[in-house]
Length: 170
Length: 207
Image (cartoon, rainbow over all chains, first blue to last red; front, side, top):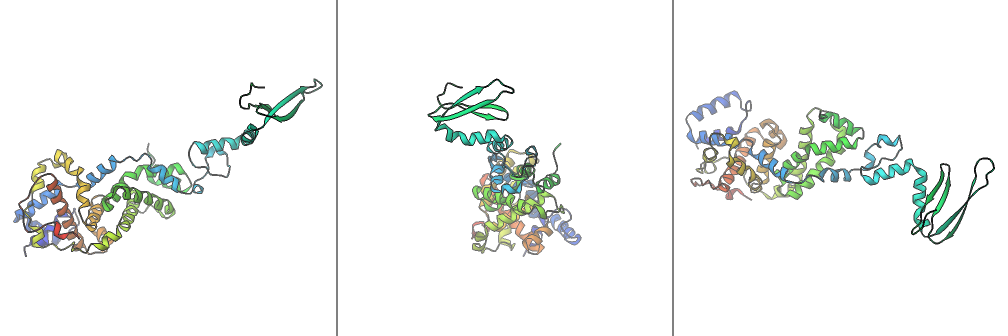
């Protein structure tokens, strides 16, 4: 058996990976073996090629959705709420739907109206406003149901008009 | 200025989803490269890569900073990759490690270095060979693919490979030699660089 079977595997060693004895014996072998010199030249020529090749393959792949897919698999409860929610306990996932929900929580009346709107859309309402003129203005709101028409809700912020389908406005 | 990995890990631990997403984006391609090298199949590599980040998230509390975050996440990726090809490993009963005369003298010595020339890192042939690397890796037994990825991408030393693979240093050296030699023969073949044919053949060592 030639010495090459012993020393050829040492050709992949990086600095410091061979013992002093191994390194000196390899050095002696290389000085007299053209085949192992050629093998060493091949090792140096292709140094880093595996990493390069795999990096190229990774670079060709579209990763635009990768992080989103990972985040979607993680529990929402793992993340703290957005600081702009001012301490509301529910942690929302990222995305437009989450931001809309956060806005509705901050504007509870609009959220209530939004929730009522589907039911009210099937019912027509008309509103009668009456200003008596004595002292602070008082607005009486009568609500009756017919078929699709606008409605006005009396709120602490003033009248809130909800337009029904096909209505001309209040 | 880019936030460093440890700062992102701390913020992710504290519940900052954006910080964890930043870590994913920073390392997704490298994790995928490692997985692809071991499992071969791109779709499986994608799934394994996602699983790796899931595992990272589960284990954030365990990361102490003893190693770099990069080392830690790649270790998780290689572990999951090796697990996912466990069935392939069991079916391959080749002798992957012995270096005998037949395997050694196949006439291919020096072919690649000659073809790549005096500036091998910059040559067009090198780019061509790199583009065929996944093909070459896919023709190797999983044990050879694994040791090449651990050595070349994760950057493990002989000692670390010996520990990770639970084999002696001598086995690491011979297995790595075998793997690199087979890879080089395949690449030379793809490039049309025909060696002087000897008694050895890569085919006889495949399962």
